[in-house]
Image (cartoon, rainbow, N blue to C red; front, side):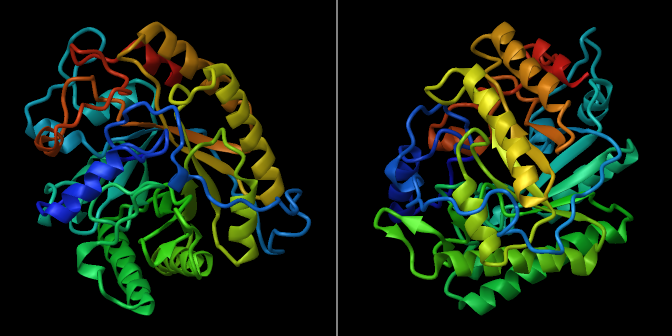
Length: 393
């Protein structure tokens, strides 16, 4: 869910100009609302085959048991915000550590994104040292941790899956090896501090594959040659790397648009031997031309359908509503979704994307790029939690 990837060259600047105008409705790091899906985000679709689970699900698939519904926060920006002097307050106006505040608000888990070498071009955040700082804070509060590998130097999403600069020019086999080593390095560093992530994402919103062009599924001309086999090979390399370090950790394959009919995608992924323990979805119900009620209904229906069809539980890895535009409506939208999704045994939990954002702070790089701030945080301008956060109580 991001709109990104920049370096100070004319070529990349032009790429950025294009990217700002070609993200799907849930693909912007600044979360600018979009209502139309661009041509390069609509894959060449094939007729769904078996979605009942009888023909496409490997015989050894099992549904992961869960002991508690995960109510989580993606806090990737928190250290950058703190370094900028941002202070978070509880509802009474008392300054409170952000992680502690999330726990007080009912959250029991934290999601942390990992970039490969962001410090080279972007900022010194979401790299391994920064992830360790945040993971320690979550562990100290007894919160579960999800690690989200973007396999990029900055945000990855369906329209932008830029290969890390250090991996560019390598062969597919070499990129797989680099991915494996990066995954193991991060997880071993966490393990060395007795921080065992409960979940790990191998890629972020990978509906159009990842590590473009190596694992790109389609472009404006249609399906890319060997796109699907390459993507599955890369994704499976991530899966195997996770299991090699943390055998009990559950691996998530994550795509966007929970409301959209993506049967075709899962059919193809599984047909080609794709590995996953959990289906991961993004859900931003106020970012399409459809009404939010219909979008919530569709997402809930797909969660139940895909869990049954593929014998995998579902995690809503990202959710966000437009608090800044209308707090009351936003709270209604999220409460409706949360109330109903928690009744589904197939759903393991929901993570709010950067809830601590409050509409005026933005990363320094966004200012340099002339980008707006993220408009779907769940805090008010005074740094206190909005009514939206009550959905996690």
